[in-house]
Length: 90
Image: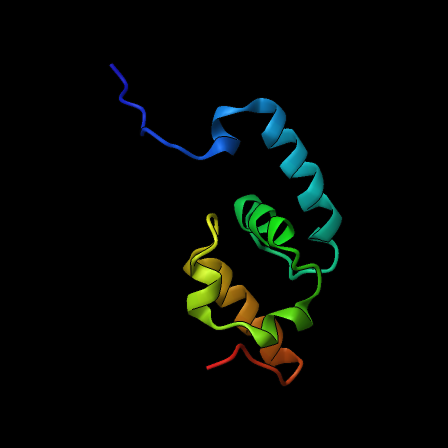
């Protein structure tokens, strides 16, 4: 018997909401660094972040509060910002 993790995320319980969120994420995917996960892209799109420069006004703690954003997304954002000589807020 497989035990499924119980979740209260509306995107994982509603196929219609997940599809709408994925469509929204697709609109920002081209303007954000490659390698970001679909959950992170959905989180950034839902929060209104569509360009890398917007992340220079945010702290790591603020980003980690977004559902779907974890350490990997932070590493990818930090690396992309560093390539441009920029960083997250301290």
